[in-house]
Structures are given as C-alpha cells and as structure tokens.
Length: 302
Image (cartoon, rainbow, N blue to C red; front, side, top):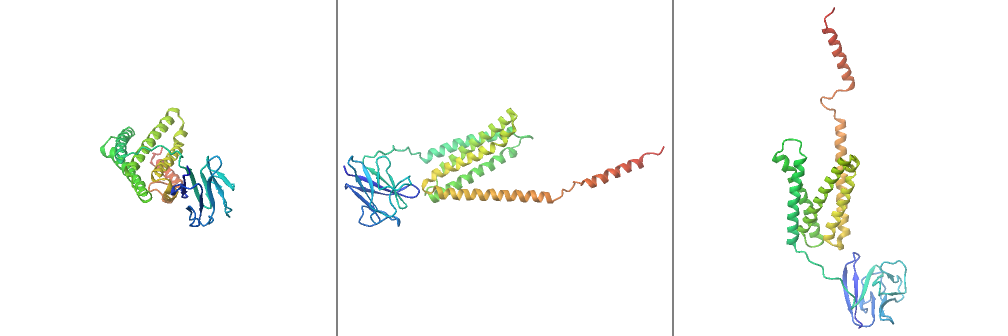
C-alpha cells in the first residue's frame, strides 16, 4: 500500500495542511509541480522527496537543497532520514510530518459540555462561599454583623467575576469561544486551593511556632498563581499560547510596578507628613522641665 500523509505544521505545532499521497514517491518544495507545495522562501523549488526503502519504511532524502534537511528536533544536517521512529522533519523554517496510512492515532477524547462546567462551577462556588463565611466569622474580633461578614465576601466574588471575565474575553478573541463556565470553574477551584493553602500555612505556623512558614507561604501562592494562569492558557489552546502569555505577563508586570509605585508614594507621603499630635524629642524635654518647675512652685515653702 503506497498511501502516505504529509502534514505541514505551523510554528505553534498545529497542522495547517494535510496532503494525501497515493504514489510511491512524494516530492516536496516551493515549485508548483511538487506533490506538496510549501510556501517558505527558505525551501528550495525541489527540496526533498519521500519514498519507501527496501524494508518498506518511509525515508526522506534531500535533493541537494541549499538549506538542507534536518530532523524536527535535531540540529545536525542529514542527507537521508528514516521516518519510522521520528516522522518529523524540518526544511527551511517549515516543519513537516510524514505518516503511513496505517499510522495509529490517539483515542477519542471525551467532550465535556458547557452545562457540566457550569454545574461544577456552581457547586464549587457554593462551597467556596460557605468556607469564606466560616473563615470570616472565626477571624472576627468584634461583634458580628451582616455588613462585616458579607461585604468582604461580596468584594471577593466581584474579583473572581472580573478575573473570569478577563480570561473569557481572551478566549473569545484568540480561540473564538468565551467558555465562561470553564474559566469560572478553573477560577473557583483555584480559590479553594488558595484558601486551603492559606489556612494550612497559618495553622502550621501557629502549631509549630515557626513564623517562617507563614512568611514563605507567599512563594507557594505565587507558584499556584502560575499554575492557574497555565490552566487558563490551556483552554485557549497552544496556537496562541505565546501571544496570550506575553499579554498576561505584561499586564501582571504593569500591575506589580503600579502597586510598588503606589506603595512607595504612600510611604514617602507618610514620612513627609508630620502627625498632628506627635511631639519631637526637644518639645517633650521642654514639657518635662516646665512640669518640674511648676511642681516646685506649687509646693509650699517650709
């Protein structure tokens, strides 16, 4: 059986073209008389041919091109490349993969409907709100009231909604679908993990009398934030992952710089502004001398 498939990959690893070849040999290049035409200025008009060796396995052979033939993940130029174990090849700036018609494919992946994501998000969200109410009530140091108990939780819900909407908008722009329920499920799950991590760190620091545990818990929180961002990026897909990751990193960097600048400005203003009822050391010394003299004057003379 002479059927083979030649796949042309994008720089993100996605298949952008797939050609079915019925002949024993396939020629690949930039010229239009090839079996597979590659739009790459670094590919020769007739760059390589794919044929079957004596053992029946597919082999790629360079046709004397300027830029040569390379394995997909290799840096050494080769004249011939067997494709039985590694079907990927690189010519110019283009990645190709060649498969036999009998090449096995992965099993079908289960598709999770949006209703399932919404159900999970609602259930996890209810659990999160319940835990937040309990933690907020346990941490209160004054008389409980609905405002003190619920206002911070409402603000937290708004933050989660903004975070989820941000990723849903990015998914809509780059993937074509907002997938809000899935983004909400990821965000709520992350909040539960953050809450558990914070409580474990505080409890461990108190039980073991080691303050460093609570101080270094922030490093774990940052690591979890990176995992959460990666999970959101995976929903958008690998095709635009680099672009979205660059945008997210730029926004995070801008937020960190803005927060640091605002904190520095507040600290500087606090240092420059003298408190209203705070006296200097010289003034306190004068006040003590005045009180001492007043005490001596008020004593009756013997």
